[in-house]
Length: 348
Image (cartoon, rainbow, N blue to C red; front, side, top):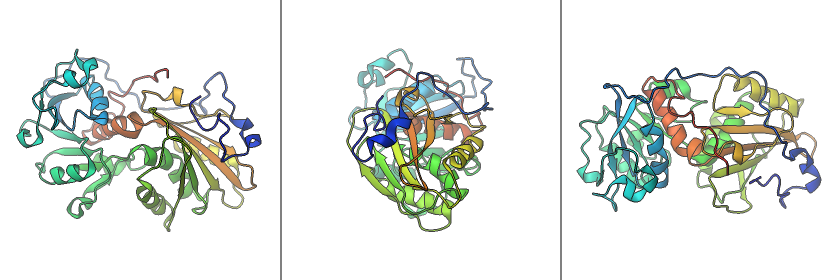
């Protein structure tokens, strides 16, 4: 299992990890009622949404293209890349050779007249400058860091889909969260809102290097708590993997139990398709989310009384980037948010 949990890492006493042993079968909490797409045909209607991808030759762009290529209501009509301008997308990503795609163009040569929506997969600084100059009619999902340009902050909605769904539905510009905020905020926001964990002493351990989005995480948690929240972030190692495992140590509120935390997450996400609280003592495993838009969560007792450990896993390039971006654009365009995102987990 590709996680700190089964490696008995140095930041935990090995005796406290027995409860995390991998079980042979994935258990999902309770009976789940999820939003189901009624679209199964690969045929794209004439009125499909015309999509542009800025920075299509990068990792997130390359992950996004196959999702949209199979989307029944979206067509890619514009892709930009600076160094690869004039080339075909299969020259950058050979596995896309079977897809009929427009050639890559430089951003200054991009024609947005036939485009309805844009995914920006550009570096943060470049993304914000370019977005400011795009036609105001375009729906935009920005996969770079959340907007810092003051003129864009007022209309940008933070795209943590399951938490900010109503705002995203009516948004023109969505700032798509990265992998760390997604995996951290999905379990913590509901628990903090319900006053089941305190806003102090939140310590996050990562298996994938240091996060540059700690201020973003602090802000969202502070909003949930209606008071200042600051997390401690510790990286134990850096692994070259799409799987992200986060172990979050929290102080439970007086009178709260691990079972209270688990049950609240089960109830909060009962009707969600992509966030799965696991039953029993099943440890979330990256192999169960690889290639999918899912986040798996579970809660365990920690060694110290009154504390708990939350384990959250996602695929960094899907739920942590391109999959959530498509989920958000689906919402913005009035589609069922799971359209195009039915990919099952891939074996590691």
